[in-house]
Image (cartoon, rainbow, N blue to C red; front, side, top):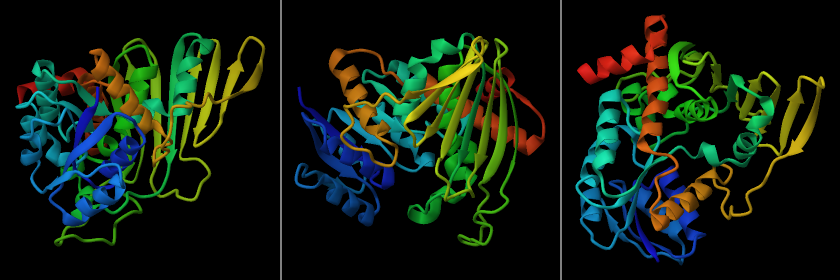
Length: 358
């Protein structure tokens, strides 16, 4: 069974998806769509000799084709809702890049649309498939009952994007949605409970302060601490800094239970397991996924994402990363953005209820 793909949005992430598909058998890229000619040229280059897709500036023409089984939506965040409305008019499977949307109202619409859609809806939260994360998941029982989770990302500023769309909260949903939905998804995956309360402190202290676009100064925060309380008593914390380039690691994850602790760093090949009873630790080698044929910008995780997506399509099983996971990850991010704005903790049940009322 050969799957025909259509790629909507051929910027950095869209081209990463193309390079992944280039290394996967029994797939074809039938068409690409992007309003920017330069972006389409990037996509054709990424296709190499394997794919010769039809090119469109309008995604609706791509979606109108009957010979496309799967679409990848890798467009700017604020365009996701309108494109997904058009996708839901078809029966095509879809991989929608993170974040699912930029606000809860649109996110809830995608969630409801996904429930009725005949095709599979997969949300691009590929950090789950990074080898260090998978190794941690496979050993999670070693820590006993999970009590605390800490994730630190210290990295470079946001990269420049076409038309500078990623410099403003109205387009991205805010830094804690655009970037950190990945980490909130990992928290929700690793902690066996639901997030209940969010408190965050953050600001735009260093990056983009001297930039202007059509007279407007960017408003995206570049550092934050986010604390999340879970219903069953667990706690999680995100430590984000986006003016910390040059370090050896971008992410560090520490998962602590009542019997021990797991620690890993990305990029890295080591998983540390601490045993409280023995008052000792040991180093475990990261379990590498031999299926990875393209590393990309995400340590091979977006390649594995496609393999898992294809498997779900061919076996008729539910997506491993569904629209509920997409909504849950952006919900925490939006609540954190609101907490920074108000200076108060945000209770997620009330926050979500308010969005339904709106």
